[in-house]
Length: 184
Length: 149
Image (cartoon, rainbow over all chains, first blue to last red; front, side, top):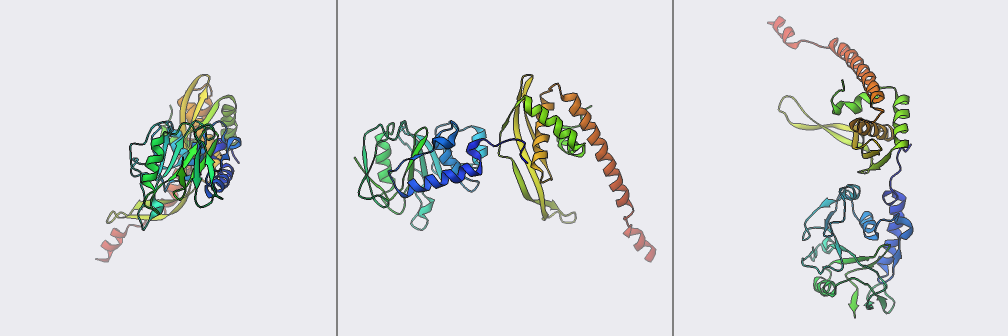
């Protein structure tokens, strides 16, 4: 019997639905998942973290927007940006750090960067190619400083090491794995 | 007089469950309750220290439930929590609500204090009965050894 209802974002059924949608777009870079019906007004970036994180993971919040309650519900450890498995940042702030890139033996240790942007469809078009993309795909993030793409190219230069990006606007997100090539 | 706060949950858990539930639900219905951490119920390892070398050991797994919340009522705001050796998350949630209500000194505080007194009395009676039955099992080994000499 439940005396109090969990907020929608933290219910197991919501996490299952989020996981399915995020997995689908992670397998098809450039496609956008609309999470609006699952969020109850919370940002899509937080929904991504709620799906990815648990008490075995670490998170660096560079936005300062996550509350103590958010951290408690994420049940994730805090870490500095160079050691965190997950990093939450805003797209307008150019990166001035080097995230975890993994090693040749453990490329899965590369960080996942969740970057909050203004929109995924109203900016300058980027062309994506690589596994999971039939030919080319386009993505038009608005509010993503060009330095992110330069840094991402540097971080992912030594495949299989590198980072995976999740770009999220208010209600939607897309995933750019380290295997994806980004062109202007 | 109120007992120490750390004893509130155990005392209320020993009080009449129906009245505890009714009072907590009445407070919940007229106030806003926000969870500050995910409510947890499950098994946790209980660690103890043995008394000879002081080494830590795991006695076994115990059921545990824990709730942390914020209660916002017109008369005040307070954080409340409860953790109990129990698998009854509904009960522990209600204890956390009563904990916050008592901290905020809501008008229901006298009713909560009455339940606390009832629970403390019930616990004292249980502990006295347990102490009595334990007392009967005590053996003075030193005395037996002295008789051998």
